[in-house]
Image (cartoon, rainbow, N blue to C red; front, side):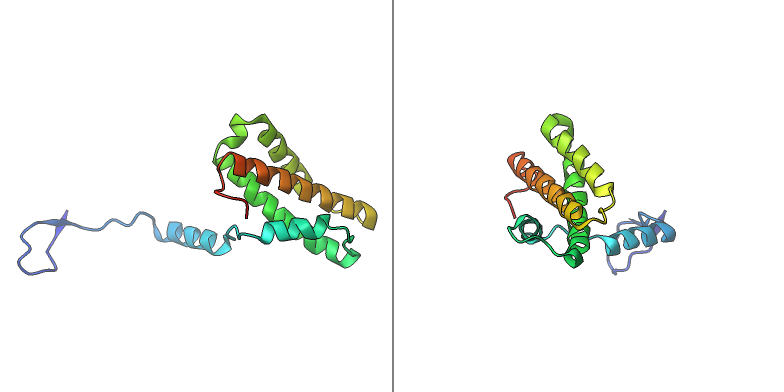
Length: 142
């Protein structure tokens, strides 16, 4: 199918534009883009440091730290899987599995156990980040 040229003097036929998605498909893509949270340099290390610091997080800080660390874990696990590093490296595959497991667990109500839980998340993040940098999935550590 061709349409009339918009520019006078253009003798070549032009095909009608075909959008890549339907209206519903475009809405779905827009919703995904709006929900997307980019990987932000430095925040991951700041959050890991805050949890692994000598000062124990208070009861009020534990849930906030857990939520932030879960988001970081989700991003790094996704990166390891999409880049196929988890398939090539057993250590990364183990960290991906540990990250998925610990991310899905509820934060214990006991403060001491809750701190242990978020510290395990932080150590998993730190190890996974180092391996992804070594595999050049990230150009440098944030």
